[in-house]
Length: 557
Image (cartoon, rainbow, N blue to C red; front, side, top):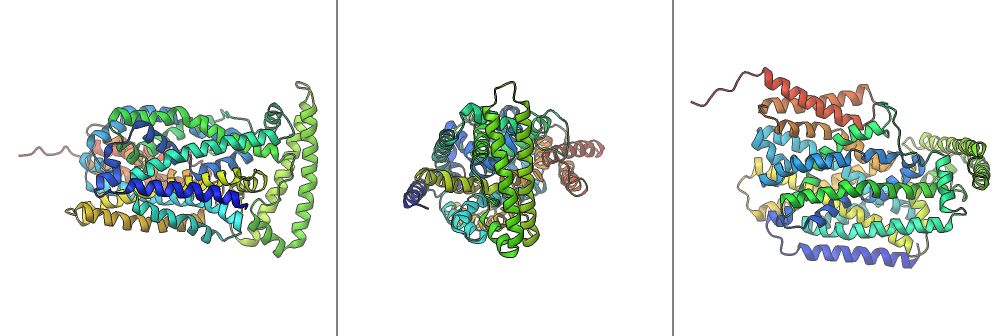
């Protein structure tokens, strides 16, 4: 990579780290370390909530999703505005006025210690898995740039982030997130401009080609439990997921608990409600335009260079045959794209059909190549996470490449720092202080918190190595979370209902996790978004039923 790109990367990351550490100085109390003394302005809290969502996973996984599957993924977020409005009048004021450090403290006040602890443990598992997927995104970039193994790449991203988080606190993370949002949006807009300038067709023509291949299809009103990206899956399953993530996940709760007031916490949430879908659409559009770009410039048979080296060395004959077929079909697809671009609108049905057919043929050969790599390596070989890194490194101008990579790495560091901070907070407040050392002073709690951050960081790095090969990282993050989110949401719904007993809530939580596990094992074809619905509904139904069947509580003498 050119030295100027390195200068941009190192300069920006150095600035973020130094500024973050400067803001962390003097933090010696746990309220300052965990909640920034509950004094952050609403706009900073709102931006940090969105920055967690626009992480390196978004820049790599979501853009790759747009290139391979188009705009359908945006339906995933259709439930977000609904969820944010509901949360603004329910869970947000409940938790903020309770003056808790974690969401799960509230559950002990409403129910009992065992319900609090089990819910917190489920959060720790879900967030550690998702944090690993976030680390995997920039590790993919490093692996592509330098040809390093994923283990080395993960260590280069994860370990410095762990150290930074151990020293800093929520205040440092929040202000780093504000800078991150500016850099990410700038990088995305710059990439879109470069693509539109370099494409051999007009912007309108590019969208026309994307639409012909189905990449601009947004709405799918079919009702199919197996398909993740439909209107109904997004509205129903997505609403449940967003309610749980933004309302009960400590990584998000910790953000709005640091706001100055309930009203400011609500305002912070509404930023995501208004702006998340347009920003997500912009990210997907980048991927769609990269797909159109590669209609005219031959992409490699493998976007992941490790796959190419593996297959070339293990079976060079098969590789040459596949590569020859791939480029022949690519030439045919390019010719079809040019024919469609030149055809008059309204009289281009044949050209559109031809382009679709040839795009399917190219995709099939690419799938055969990935299957061969998987057969040789014995590991999953989807390369959707390598599409954007390949484009950035080979096609963007000098300087802009560095800006994009800086945005990816900074986004990962910032998001991971926030996740590790939440994991540390839940570990210390819900488990260490609650069960092991209730009388610990702030100095002791801060020391344990930093140690917990290090342990969770190492666990997340281990998960990252595994996650990089599981397909679109944006899917991986939400697939991990959906195992737990619905059941956690269910127990918070029970907490806001009258006459629900503590033991009923605890048993309902167990029932919800069991139901989700059963769906995963016995109906794996069901989309992961429905796991959120299954978990929440089961917990609420089981908790309400068990409470109704329990004998009345004895009145105090």
